[in-house]
Length: 105
Image (cartoon, rainbow, N blue to C red; front, side, top):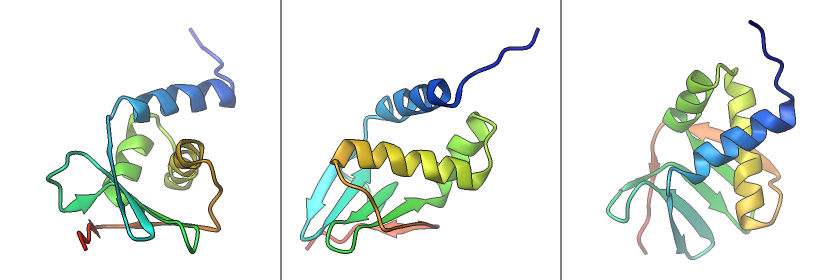
């Protein structure tokens, strides 16, 4: 049996998946980090409010792409839109990075 899922429906499912990750938001200077726990030294997502730059960890992008059978750029775009909805502003640049180090100063 074949099912057709609209893009907006898929986005809602992925947004719900990301909501259920229960990321901890940590705000430092002009950066907002999305962490798996308060003790993490590496973030899943980093947002620079000043430059409107969003960095998504490669592992999170791979996880979403694999789980939902998406291409990497599609997963990155959806994750960025989820973060934009959470924070209430759009990004100028979105990138991926292997390790996003959290700076606690």
